[in-house]
Image (tube, rainbow, N blue to C red):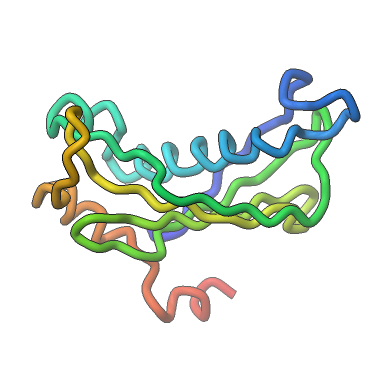
Amino acid sequence: MSRHRTSYRVIYGDTDCGGVVYYGNYFRFFELGRTELLRANGLTYRQIEEKEGLILPVVEAHARYRAPARYDDELLIETEITELHPFKIRFEYVIYREGRPIVQGYTVHAPVTREGKLVRFPARIWQCLQGLVRSPNSDKNNE
């Protein structure tokens, strides 16, 4: 499974004084999508932190906003891994409302120790992640 979908209903606390989702909250929605993609494939952040002693901080992030989401909207968060290198991983996201894309973005993460030292992904994690990377033909297969 290279693409994962999870749904989220916007709560009042996600919105700003204008009644729309505050722009920074979309990065939380990206995190939800990323976390659930990993969980659905037998890997959790807790395991990565506790068993491997690694954290995966965001080292780059981007979002393009096309339309707003509002309180009580049902969102669909689509997440996939598009790049995997020994020292970084890239997740891409599309958030949909009523079947239409409203936000697209990506985050790049680097595996580091708790002390902040950049390291390669451990073999067990690497193997799991390799099986999740979008193949070049996956877009054709999913259309």
